[in-house]
Image (cartoon, rainbow, N blue to C red; front, top):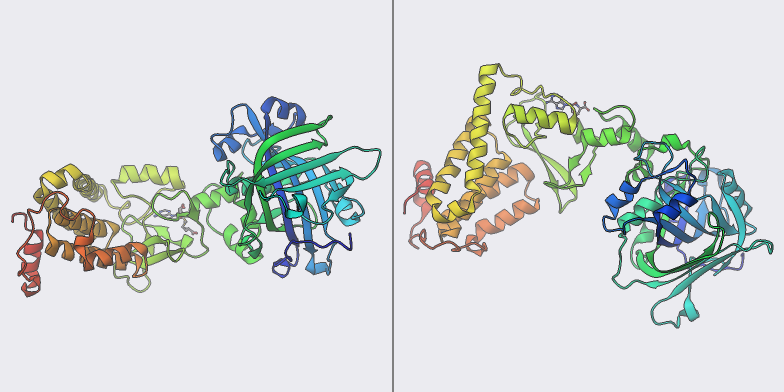
Length: 545
Ligand SMILES: C[S@@+](CC[C@H](N)C(=O)[O-])C[C@H]1O[C@@H](n2cnc3c(N)ncnc32)[C@H](O)[C@@H]1O
């Protein structure tokens, strides 16, 4: 093996994680759909199969089937800086079984990998694996020290590759052969699925788990080494199968990633709660992990990770399914009368907090976790989504005042709904515009001196009403006000602010300009600059032309 050359890149992150074993794991994972009944027979009966977990990730995975993994990988440039160790490269091959329930929670997914072929002669790798309870067949690999080799030395035009592993001892006849080629656009199992299964904690017996993590965010996964979807075949004789197997036309991924591995195993119990994010958390620095676990948790108990995420995550964009957890801004409490606005800035990839009204020195900073509405609806939302009862200034009002606030908020909702009706905007724009004006005044009553998201939205609605009926002059004013509201809420550099600015500079560029009529087209010579403030308001909100 010493004379081997490898095409794998050097381990780029050893010094970032001196207390962990790190390296470059390069190779292929093919997903082999096998009948669930066969999987049930092969996998020890005490481990449940969490079918809903893989169906959630792969809704169209064939009925009655289970996604087994066929894995052939090369471990390159292993380092363990804290101990000055640099173990030799090795290869391994196995059939592995993800989505197993070993804790009985029907939630935490573990991967069972009890038998492996590992490069003969690499005692560190072999004894290390045996320490996890894995049955190891010392093996010979073709190619001997690479992740895979080109078929015909690269002469094959479809980029076909192979990875063959066979047990070394003549008395054994175990083998795992993978043959594959780029799938050319066919990618039934997206990269997120691969990340999930390759990062499930792995075990041979459930007394100890290997918290092995593949990192998909290092330089190793950047072009030209980005993951490649592949299609191919698997032939194998290895436990838990007792006779040779062959599967054709299966799909998977060839990837080279960084990986991290603690030098000793963890109790499997301590790794519960894996939902696809846990390994990333584990790869944070100790200080970042401390900050994460110091965050408030309204759902203490079984799943601290999930509880902290549920209590703290801010959605990365309105309605986004992805959320972010931050050490500082997740400390900001909710108020139904907030003085700040939180916003995901897609251009900057940052969650930003902007003041939306004047804040006195010493005053608590607050944001709005809700979508507004009257207090009874808010109470349900806070309990269900976050597990708390709101004690903000509004929710703590005496009953009569709370009722008055609720009445105003119901009216705000009704106005929002009426303005959102496109038919009315077309047939009765004057009434829609009057509603925008009424909404502006109602917002000022309920949220005094505040530039809320509702203000930005109503000015944008007013802009749309104006331009849809050919009113460029008022469209320009409304767009400018919507733009200024966005600047307050989100800053100059948010995508929505930039879009609004562009519209204010050129209102007739909007796709709905004149779409309903041109009946509000004003005289060319009219210049609103000449109006005083009061006249400007009258002109802006007037309903008849
Ligand atoms: C994202 S955390 C905010 C920071 C948290 N208060 C802390 O000390 O770390 C959200 C949790 O704070 C508490 N909280 C936030 N706003 C609240 C409010 N208006 N009334 C009562 N509890 C609130 C609730 O327990 C809520 O689930």
